[in-house]
Length: 392
Image (cartoon, rainbow, N blue to C red; front, side):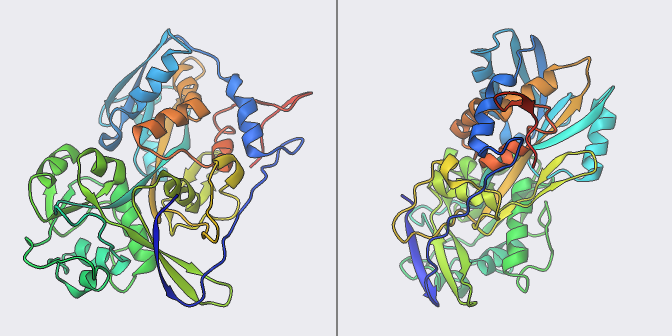
C-alpha cells in the first residue's frame, strides 16, 4: 500500500473513484477491448532500427526481447536519437514541428503516426547520504531550479522537513543536461502550475541555472560523486544509480474549496499508475494522439479505469497518485512497403509490450488511453459478431 503522510489545511477529501467505460460498437469496457486486440498484431520478419532518446536507452530492446519469443524472425536495433530511423522514441510530447521534422528526415514515403507509449515518474534526485525522502514543495523545487535556493538549511526546505538535520551539509549544486529533456519539461510544468510566483519561466526543457552536461550519462556520472548535487531525473534512473529521491505533495481540493496537502512517497508503483491518468490527451488533424505531462496526481475524468488497472485503495485512501510524470511517445513512419515500424509500435502498446516497459522501470499507459492508441495504429478490435475500431 502507498505510504502517505498527511498535512491538512481543511477537511480531508473522501476517496474518489473515477471510472471510464470506453465506447465502441457495441459498447465494451476498455480492458475487454484491449484484450480482444491483443491477437490482432501479425509478425513481420526483419530487422528494425529505432532511434531512442538517451533517457530510455535499453527500453525498446527490452520490448524487442519479449517480442522475439512470439516473432523470432523480427529483431530490434536501438540507435541514438540523432540517427535516421523509421521509428523513434522521444521523452516528451512532440510538437507539430517535431513531427514534421521527423517525417522529412526519416520517412521516405507515407505519413507520420504519433502515439504515447508510457509514462515515467519524475522527481528531484540528489546525492546527500542519510537524507533520503526529503519533502520538496513546488516552491522549493522552483527555488532550486532557478538557483535562488542554494542551501539545504534554507527555510523553504527546513520547514517541510522538521525531522531532518539539514545543518553542516555541502551547498546545493544544481546539475542539468544541455539539450532539452522531457523530465525537465514535466517538472517545470508542475512548478508553473503550482508555484507560478516562484517559477515564472513556464514549461522549459533546459535550465538556465546550475552546471550543464552534454549528456544524461555525463550528468549522472557527476551527480553520483558530488555530495550535495541535485538534478531533475526520472525516478527509475535515480533508483538505478542509488540516488535519493524527493517526495512531492499533491493538493486535493474539495467541492467546498478547502484543500488537503498529501505528501506521497516516491517508491510505490501504484502511485505512478494513478498519477499517469492526470495527463491531457489531444488528437491532431491527422489523428495523432499526444499526451501532455501528467501533473497534479489526480486523474482526469475519462483517463483512468480503476478496475482494469488493478489498483487497490485502502480504506479512506484518497484516489491520488504521483504528481509529476512525463510521457514518452513513438513517432512511426507509416509506409505500406515497410511494415516493421507499425508492427513493432503495435506490439509496444500491447499488454505484453507494456509489461516489458514496466519491468524496465516505466509506467504503463492507463487502459482508456492505451485503447485510444489502437485507432492511429490501425489495430482492429473484434467485437464478437463483427470487427470494429474502438472510438475514443
